[in-house]
Length: 273
Image 1 (cartoon, one colour):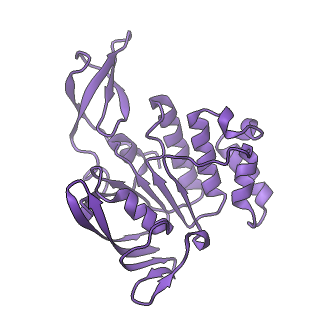
Image 2 (cartoon, helix red, strand yellow; image 1 turned 30 degrees about the vertical axis):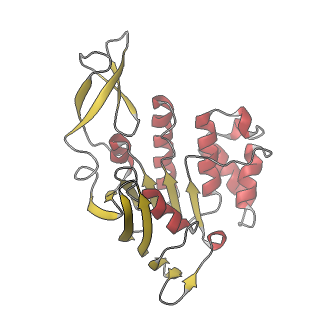
Image 3 (cartoon, helix red, strand yellow; image 1 turned 180 degrees about the vertical axis):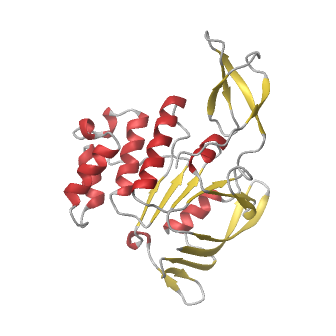
């Protein structure tokens, strides 16, 4: 069980605001954070990681206190058994794929076996001797995810890790993320602006706005409205439309519309877990 109530002063385009979020995550839950830019989503992840210090509150993970303002308790990030993947994958450029994973797994029981298993699970075995510069964006993202898992995290934190990838790659990695989450029985917090991604992966959604929790519930009730607006980017030879959703995600749909036209799309909730 992960429980926290964290506060932090925010400086937004709309002026100063206070982040004030209290949540509890069940073991094995995949919680999605949604909301507009400046809502406090990334700030909350940084507070959980320990890269930023809260102004007040507490954070408990499996009965252990990582932060308690009243008791002046603070666990530094290097001592928190968690994994995190941000939009910048931050792989070590001078290390191979295997070496990146081995560095993260150092000190873990059966570290070499774990690295081999992660390479196989995320289809990286044939790329193990390559360095990050020789990998595609999707391959680098798989390495970043594998490296985060090599620490045997109690909590996995993901800040829009798939947003910069093309649609086919993003869909494959969504499936891989779902499989990893299930196989490792992870408790995960995912930031995403993509309603379809949230619907596929999340067990629960928290909508933030200006540092406050606005709604909490299953994806069908919070992150996936009956319709979502999209802009037509291209009409393919097959007749399908390539449509951009809010947040930058792209989908292929059937229908008739011109390039540049705004259309409404019905959202169907389908989860992979």
